[in-house]
Every structure is written in C-alpha cells, then in structure tokens.
Image (cartoon, rainbow, N blue to C red; front, side, top):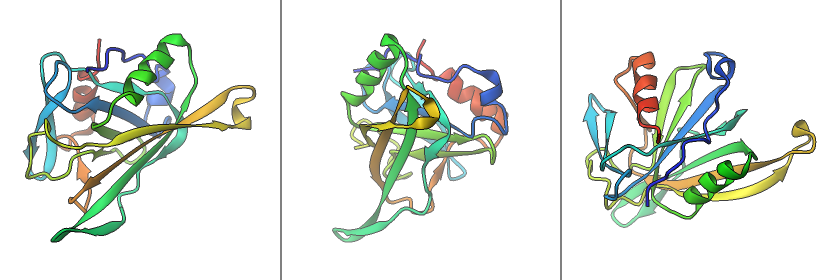
Length: 196
C-alpha cells in the first residue's frame, strides 16, 4: 500500500528556515508496490538517492518545533553471530483535521518504513530503517515500525499533541546519512519525493 497524502507536512516557511523548525521528518513505505521505496543508491558511504516503484509517495510529518529525537548513539545487542543496534525515532506531531488523521492512519496501518530526519540547525540528514548499506534492495527489508501515543500538553492549550514512534534495527552503528553532502540540493531531492 502506498501512502496517498502528503498533507502532514509543515507549511510555514519561517518554521522551515535554518534556525526555525529544528527537525523535519520524511517517511516512506518500503516494498515493491507503486509509490514504495524499493532500493537506494550508495555514494561515498551515504544514501545518495532512493528508488521508488512508479511515482514517489513520501510523507513529511508536521512536527512540533524541537519535538523530534533520533539519537545516533543507538544501543547494541547480540544477534546471532553479530550485533545489531536499535534505532528509535520519536516525533511530537500536532492533531489536525480529518485529512491529516486519515493520512496518519495510513502510516499506522503499515510496517516497514524508511525515515529521514532533517536537522535544519546542523544541516544533518539522518536515515533510519535501513539494516545495512551493503543490502540496497529494500523490498525485503524490515524497516521501522510505527506506533502512536497521545500526550496532553499545556503548551498547546486545549489541543492534544501526539507522539509517533518508529523503531527498527541496523548494523550501521555509526549511523547513516542521506544525500550528496550539499544541503540545499539534498532538501530539494527529498521534497521531490513527496506524494502529490
């Protein structure tokens, strides 16, 4: 199933500027159905590009400013003959209208996501949901699994915020980054992946 709505994204230009909204979160389903990410390209140790089946169908979450955590120092555990690291992304998102909630339901109804987190302040673009840079075929990858919790937050007055959490595993202990290293170009590339 492809995600069909991209209306979760933040639209305020001042919040997306450097020094404004600190984190932007892009998510896409892994697989071989139309709109899903089926592979990626590695260039100089970075995930330089994503390959979608047909039309790209990535979603940008509307996150609360400073409401995203995605630590690079992930805990490692023994797994078979090796070790794996657990990746956890937490993002506080605001409740919106019916379309927003329907788009969110599409995400929560699935597993196996790739997530890309943009930090405007440091201009770092981190990736979660890729088990190994050596396995560029994402059709069989487990990706990250989403869940949602509701939290009352006085800073939103009578609005309730929600925290969406994505959890997955990787053997890339040093973390993974997206793009070519040219920040402005990489942001344009990500925004080009958004669902229409």
